[in-house]
Picture 1 (cartoon, helix red, strand yellow):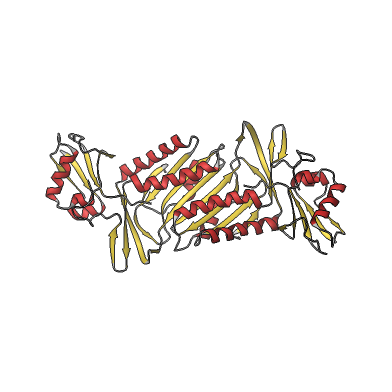
Picture 2 (cartoon, each protein chain N blue to C red):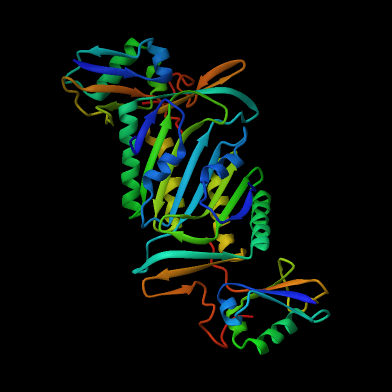
Length: 77
Length: 77
Length: 146
Length: 146
């Protein structure tokens, strides 16, 4: 199982701040596809996916216990 | 009469912080010459002369009551 | 108090300036970003910031490390506030100390630019007639994104 | 407290930052110049600053006016301390607020450069084995100068 966080505007798309999913062994790209099916439009608002608090590449593999996060365009400062 | 101020290292050359002199009607350049005769070396350390708290030009005329100042190279900050 | 942190209370910028001061520091630059009332003719009532806190603090610390590498001798502290902020409230503070002033200015400006690039913090503007997350998060269906 | 002043007591930088803050200001930069212990391998014990006070305050205000002209919307406050200063003491504080951050950084750096050019303030460094006014005031008999 991995944990998935949604932030800011994406949280309004999904209606939840976080959830768990059985995506161990899948890639970050597949996580994106999985979320896009469940939450149409989510990829339009997410600029990056982070895994364990670091920006991830599409080909990175997810492991059991990983914490993923959909990161909308940042706008701090 | 005009008042003349000496600052920082120049005060150590002249031995005084200020004095008065009868230089009304003379130019700023003449004030410099007057000071250089009285305090040899003063012009080597003064980069500018101010009159009434503004930097003056050599040809500016001094008037009765003016306040002049020998300004060493500034080093604030 | 940490040198790189997300906080939910009012920021006292002086604390971060004090944190970077050392006998070899000749210059300290302190930048504070404030909530502005007017942006492009639209009046803001207040702002709301959200952060992915642990990752945001890691990224702030990364910016501090990048600065030490680019400007040897420079030391940095950064805090960003989240939650609801009123006009003139401080959203972000960046303190940089350095032996020489040029590096303190440059590194400070570098920090705010990097914050806007890599730190997971999001701003929502609330106006009299609506609100919006800044950054086009739901505006281009099928457009940009991943 | 004035926005452009020479002071003889410890400087509280926050007072000057507060002085320039306004609802339209999105950015405040605060520069503090501190007494550094080591300069080019020589250890400073303390510094002594002297100013031609009324003229120095006029010149600081002139710098503020120059900034308002070059960066419309920028507001400036500057204080410089005189007398004896210990290591890490603040010698000068420059606060600039502006709607946008770029101007706040640029104008602040402009201010410190202008201070070093036109404001009649002089620094004497006191070391273990001597002291000297900075700026070659007595070093080149018959050389530079007027």
